[in-house]
Image (cartoon, rainbow, N blue to C red; front, side):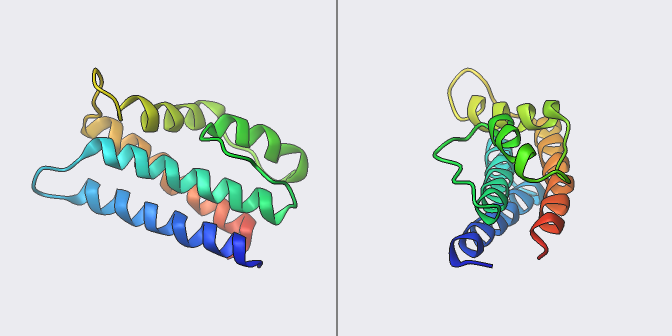
Length: 126
């Protein structure tokens, strides 16, 4: 595993830990942060896998786009686009005034992330 892939993995794991911690917070949990860090975890894992497959993903936060460029170079990769779109939207929309994540949004984002993370780590052979 090259150093760049390893660094993406380390950063993804920190985002995952932050989302998990915030979701479990007993006092004043920040559900917007759960959604943001859940998406960030998956974004970083997808980028790590792309780099491992010799594809430079560029600067994007769109998980559906990352899915699109990963599919041709990783035939064993598949995931429902609706989950990826939910995570992307949750990370972006809830960061701005006018929308806020509730516990249900945060639980859904973390659940998707937990399952996706397991699959991506297997593909990265960690």
